[in-house]
Image 1 (cartoon, rainbow, N blue to C red):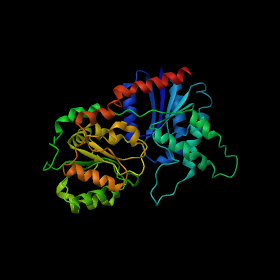
Image 2: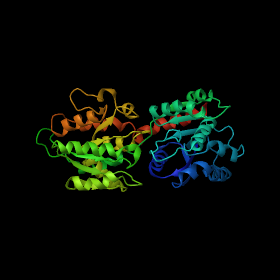
Image 3: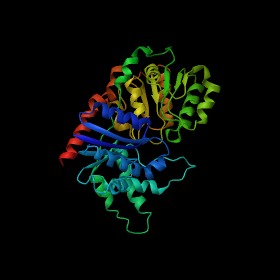
Image 4: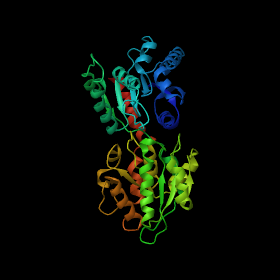
Length: 378
């Protein structure tokens, strides 16, 4: 089979996703991409460039069996601009996120035009694939209210049509690359008097990840005498004030500060850490968390969003080890305090590693290749 891949925002997590897909798929792939800048313009106008490149690819002899587009593609415009050249070829849209429910800070205003592009693309696609059940539910639940904001001809029945052609497929992750840095791990004998564990933050330093709550947690733990060390990594665009201010209180405990773009540097940081915390108010999937868990960090995650579906139910509140999900900030504080004072033990390394192992591309590629084959045969 031949798969034509469309990605107008080829960078960061989206680029890593496609690199893994292309490297491991048994099918022949052709990626048409654009640089990861100006996301609003990519979503609105990128279809013109993608269509021109797709026609050129077709003229050069690459006739795809399936078109695989990301949520950043204006698929309705792409289909119109290619003037029927790809008629009969099924189009699959993969939703990493969406602009109908993408989290905004209180200072931002949501432009409904971007959400409407996602909606039109969803109508045009033959199959919609979401990276989590939580994401699928969130998007389809939001559609009726969104369409209801328009004065007439809202076609609310289209929501059910979109639901019926939607499915969930967790994304693949290049996890085994981190095995090469296992020698960086710092084993701990958990219990009273142990060496201070390392707490990891490897999420984006942005509003939706809620760094305010993370530093409130650290301050409370410090106030009651808990000992810990810190790795503050993760991609940042506008640096959160809390991270800069953290030096005044935790400078002697910070082992790393700033985005670790180099794979080896990042892999060694993951291997060193013992606990990874999320205080997110929104999450479509959670790649960085799964990377940390694979490398041996016990997760402390909100009992909402995508997190319950990413962890086996038996590990939400295991009998012999510390919980992995918490209900609120006070619950998180109680669990963390218990772990840091040696009263509860994190999950064993082999258990943690097994949680996301099935999502490594060497395994998860089978599900993506099967998706392409099923769509093509339909």
